[in-house]
Length: 547
Ligand code: GLN
Image (cartoon, rainbow, N blue to C red):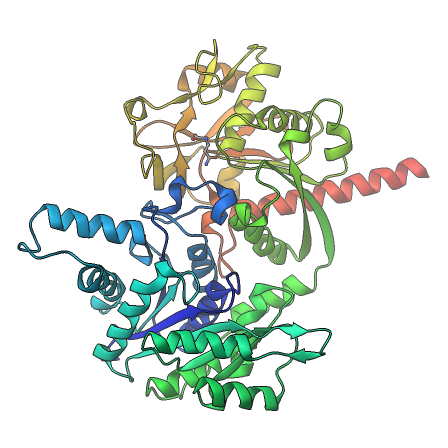
């Protein structure tokens, strides 16, 4: 294909309509037709990246191979497309301004007054086109965060307007996602909010080419016609996006609505291929027809907000489908776990996952949960802080190192089994300064993880400051906590596992960032498989007991 095509996705009426899922679903359909496709998210907030944000703000911070701390929508993009994203795929207003201000300080604007138009808008346009420039992609889908009409979205909307004009109708199009609410009292779907949203977009000089309407009820032909005429789009370009039971249904729903067909037509591309969704639909079938159910406890402290652990929850869906089981995730707040509540909260579970996190709040509950899983042979997976908690628990209760801790929680602990890295000690600024992105790890012979990954060296993504303290390594190993994954460059322990336990693994990295529909993560697959074995054994023991 000669030129890269640009598709912009804007949102109106309300936030949280699922722009990311619509963008990812369209990308999936285009990819399934053979187009090389990538997705980009532009976020209108002033943080340079979401790395410094509390998970309660925007949910999980997703990490890419190149170590960018990004919006969680990039996780959806990778899970849907099975293609890596990078720093270039997520740009915030903070990053745009930072770069413009740095250019100004270097004198690159030659004495001109630096302004939102053209300097900020040019920088936005540059960031959008950067992805399309090296010929790697046929299609670049750019999702504009926020809602049309927001003050902070204005420079982005203006950049899109200019780009659409510069690139021409055959090379760029705008999809506007809105909400068509249902008024129960009137028993009617209402189009007015969408009309107003389109009007706001028009005031900025942009005519939407395609309208995607989130709705709880089917859009009738009458409603579609009304939306088309008042919003200035062809009727075939009014696409219904009805609530789905799983986000993984959305590509097929968009296919049925003809979203990809309308896109190809608008971009003057031949509609010759048929989307190949075989692998995708096989996954969906398995996901929807489980043969067994396991209960997994997700022990964390941001459990009130499901988005905080998005990638972990999605990894369970992928691994569940692979095992043909339903993974029922029970979110358990670690602050409410203590010696009296632990049995009640954990004993019925078939697997325990102790989640990543930062700071002191809720960590004693996590340590209690590790202990319960270790002593009762319940399959256990500890991720990042979860792995660190497993090390602390082992040091305290097996090695009897009273007060063993991480220096993150107790800087004066007598037994810093988890400690800050030397090079981290001098760091004073918070943004982008952790151990981030993809690192190599060598797996130890005869370890459980080696049999799971079935290879010698793996690469996994990190996001942390503190590390396993090698001073305690031989003591830990002798007592049965094996270091089964080592960073070949630094000698840092990346994986621990227990000898006398059927399935107990702690990983310093985040496997959840690499699980996709096409390649579910081996650790999650094995963890769920172990939970199935544990659950079946528990059930048959119960039956035997009753007989
Ligand atoms: N707070 C821990 C550290 O910085 C763990 C981080 C995490 O779980 N992502 O090392």
